[in-house]
Image (cartoon, rainbow, N blue to C red; front, top):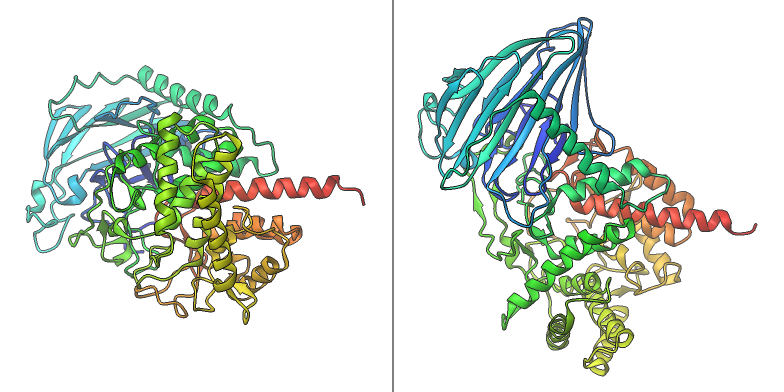
Length: 633
């Protein structure tokens, strides 16, 4: 593994503005602050030498018979790594106390607590931050035996310790970079000063460290002293937050633990000050080891976030759904007279500028280069976003008063003039524009939802024109998006290639889930895109996407397949596919974007799209199973 853990060998913690990944080895190897999309402090998952990390773990590697297990404290985002050895049993708990404030914070606290419950265990602490994706040097000040400050450009990291451990400086000459260089700035290795500690805990002893990042240019208020009592209070506050939040959940189905974990994951990936969810916590994790499909997913996709609204409402998390709808309306209002009213993705604060850059100094996960920060796909044309946005807004009667409705109606008037264009499609391919069937499907959804809202709530709008365009789109899809040879709806006009995005056709109401044309489409997908219940997005060999290499099965599509099977009445097949898919979750119930050829998780992690589709599939399957079980005979 060349110093890299498996992508799936991680749990995620967060405070609703930032998120960190903690490996099963007890290493924080990804943390960006003060926001999800800020430059990293720890990024060893993208470069095991230059990226930076913080490790706090029991030193059990050389203890015969020792085992390590990582888990979440039930119904929380508190991550526990447990160490069990003949001489002692202990654990490290990692968490961040959620901050639901509407004001972005420049200061964030990551808490790590080590304790031994039986016998004794040796522990090791190594803190090696690397600022700005490992490009910037830092200065270290050891304040005393239990406190140190790492000072980087525009950001500082305050390390505080409590309990029986003593911090010491460790220059680690030779640990970073090659040929005396580290990153692009050419700083000597010995300039990167780090902090380490070795200590032993006996039964009932506790040690804690708190990493406080501060990005306030005026340094902000002093960091308060650390006490074990304060750490216990923070732990209790974090646990209470998640228990209180989950009380809103209405889910009472068969897969409670997995649905609850997915809901917590979606919440962790949502930026509280604006209500905008990001696609994933990470950037640069490969869809193929050693390949070039390494994207930055720390942004808010109109598509992903809009599809999450239905899942959140079905679970009972209405406030989260409404917060995103408010953010979405603000994007429409901010568009003004722009050529395109929406772009496919934004930063969490609504900033549309996502300039893509290549971080050449980073090795990439297991050598997967290039590592990209930012996302050039933000400039693509994807017409499907208007249907997904309309569907999200239509989930509530109130979409922003008179101004909100007029903005939405204006969007539909604009779309009526501009919908019939080729685009890049849902998967952000870089192989040229096509007349994608899925984009047309979502165009149909946009007009359908607008017509429904105008009619149901007596809103003013050019309903006659919208209806005419909606019906024209419907006829075009049926005439040109259907392949008589394949007896299936296809990826784009003029091809026979299949595309799993069309699994959403029944859910959005375009076609009955038991229509013969849809059932034959399902059959065609099963033959070409499904492998042991796992689903590929499409076949890149048959439909070149402008990128080298291949990819694994797409977890979103696998769960969409379950939902489609369930609604088609193929319940045994749907339940088998769902249960099979759940076996690919990692040890704490999280999913990345894809499953690789050897069953490994690939792509950015954890992936919100996957978890919202899991929730939707579970709800649909529960409904259909209940209906079948209650039917006579």
